[in-house]
Length: 331
Image 1 (spheres, rainbow, N blue to C red):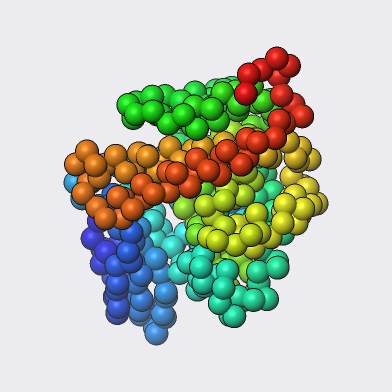
Image 2 (cartoon, rainbow, N blue to C red):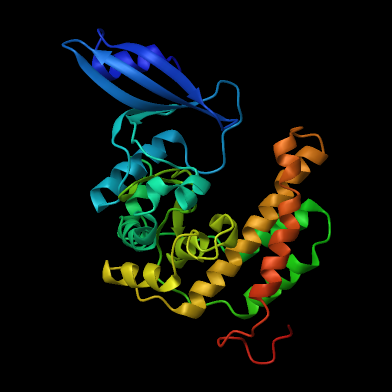
């Protein structure tokens, strides 16, 4: 179902009408609409509708029904998320949470000055709640419960992606070698958000109001989420390492106090380094889409300059030999 009016009537009854609607920017395979809905009796609802675009190839990651299921499980675990009003295989209708998502505004505008010192701690608390979610939230309804499969090896996955791009990137090769030689010992597996960062959070003057974009959720090491939040790209020019708004200690202490596992700082650094590598390879992928004619786009072309930024960031991260290095490993 992709008709906005039909979705609203199904959720609120035949008398419901869309008084105002605007498509929000972003998303080639999905549409996002801000809707103001009136219901019989004078009710007013400010909503967000996400739709699969007709004819578009599905995005990697969870479908919209799976995303809705994850968000409901997240709410049950205490994660701040929009409330799901209705959902189907091709849509999610949810409450519209007021606030800001643009990182540069969050990091610089006076309206968020009081929130900024709180955000790293609030991220730690939200991530601890995410990692308490049952792994069953990742299964489709009716899917039999069975012993969870071993999570995908992230290094192998991104090594294969880099190889398929067909062009040399020595810094990324060095990072893959270093990460393989210093891989942290196996940790517990939890639900991992997959894209928890500044830009996917709705922030108000008091702090985080909602966590967005659950389509990349998967089972894995929970430190993947903490490391990704600390990737330099998500600092947007700020010297503060956690999302541009906080220190490692603020994030880690809040995460541990909220019931998250004890955080090994070397393991966190490993996952931060992995995150920079991953983002660098994604930048190459996006640039290749433009250069090879898959999607001609100035935005995709501009992402190409981010490749060398990530290479520089990786070289800085790789300067010091980690304490858990494999003896005799070549650097």
